[in-house]
Length: 110
Length: 113
Image (cartoon, rainbow over all chains, first blue to last red; front, side, top):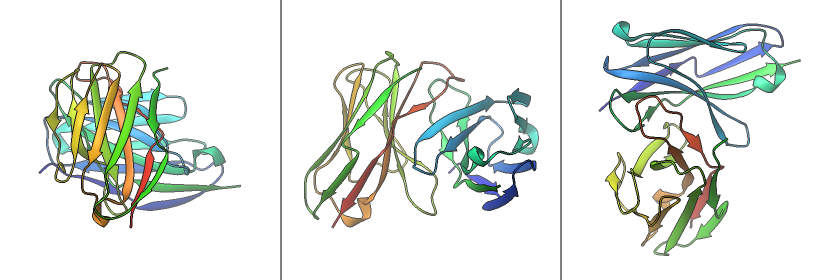
């Protein structure tokens, strides 16, 4: 079946540092979404990016569909960025049936 | 902001027990989903629905039933709970369409003893 692999598994940052999270997926007919999971467990959608580059705040998502990879860049990290970042891919059809990666756990230290 | 409310937030049952997890969304989204999250696995889709009365099978449906009674309400049923179903369960909803955002509930932590 479809697979999503994320790297690194975990990351420790000093506040203010930048970070790049990677996502590789198994299908080219896909769109990529990034989610943030708070330490308490709740999930929020960050970005949906089928191809190219997309920005929101300090986050930049880049998806290269033909190469089956994407990345999420976090600039000027803050302590409140700590948590788990999940990459998910879905088919280019109606609905939102996503396949999730295991996530990258990020810890930002003061 | 779409609201997705799950209940209960925590549940403990015994092997063979009967459990119903509830989910309500208040933004009239067409699609609703049940996922489970376990250490070492990403979120895995159990069942989903694109409207009242509709049910679609996800990737890990064994041992689960689901029912979408209204546009707002989606239930996940474990009729003979097993320890392997101990997990964190998330409900989510989204609008119709390819690029629409998933809105998640806060999760239900289920322990089957």
